[in-house]
Image (cartoon, rainbow, N blue to C red; front, side, top):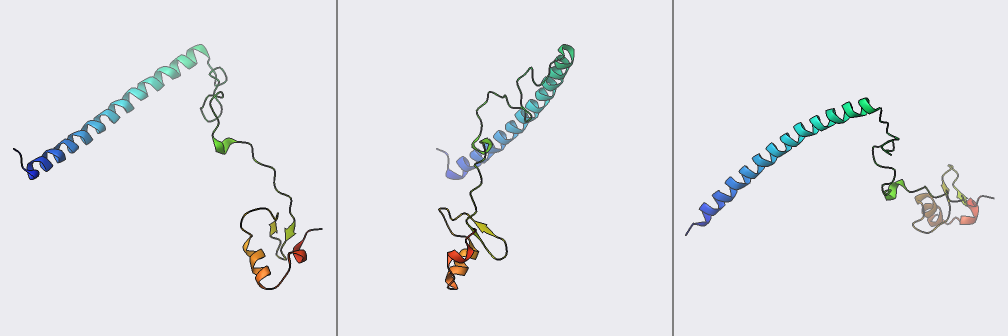
Length: 117
């Protein structure tokens, strides 16, 4: 039966072998990828293929691909209801109040004083 030290040494050796194999695989993939890209460039030039033919948008993704949440249309800006003396604005919506509002309220001022009319 093997000792704990022997098993630990074998694990470390296998980890090194795995790391080396992963490095070799990445190197091969990179080399193959370069060949594929060159082949695609030749075919694109030969047949006059455009990004529109491939239905690609400006970022290289297919236009039929699902949009990410960040690519969703932006919401309309909230209507400004309050303005600070320094020009900062707040819509009075849900969530935390801006610092300038909390400081003004703590100083005894009213929101009515900052209301945009």
